[in-house]
Length: 219
Image (cartoon, rainbow, N blue to C red):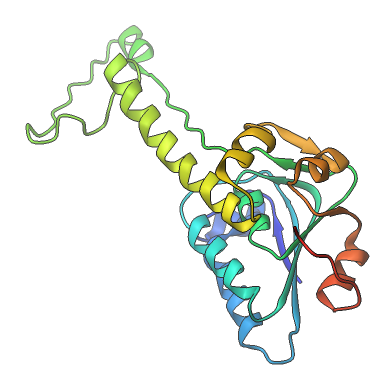
């Protein structure tokens, strides 16, 4: 049983030890250890996470997906399986959702803070120099050109996310874009009906799947 709780980050540090969360490098270590252990027949990912950072999630998703050829894998979503957490869940052979679980939030977002007005009000002016060869380095989010560059970058990352989910869930990219919430989250039975999860269940029923006592076939 591998827990994916809290915010997902690329690497663990003392802050994650203090405040909780999951890190891609430690999760990858645990998945690899389970794969290398001949006593382990199945891996259950217990998930309650709002998602997190992009870095490391694609690689971890690929590792989890490859595990399906060697072990039974199942994701059990008890609370949230959103954004990066759903990306990882989709790589499992089966997704079991609690009837109150929230799944989806497929997409990428970034937040920029414009401090220029605040600095001006206290008499501070920033003077920035960027190499002539790199006119688009550090695109400004308060300009039309900068917004366009940043939006294109976010869209490129989201396309990787969508394509991975489509491959993991054995559906088309168009199905993910039209049926999987368009960035929204779906609850329990609605998530199953839309194809984001395979069945409604609990932790015990998910354990039955990875132990081979119960079979669930994904279309």
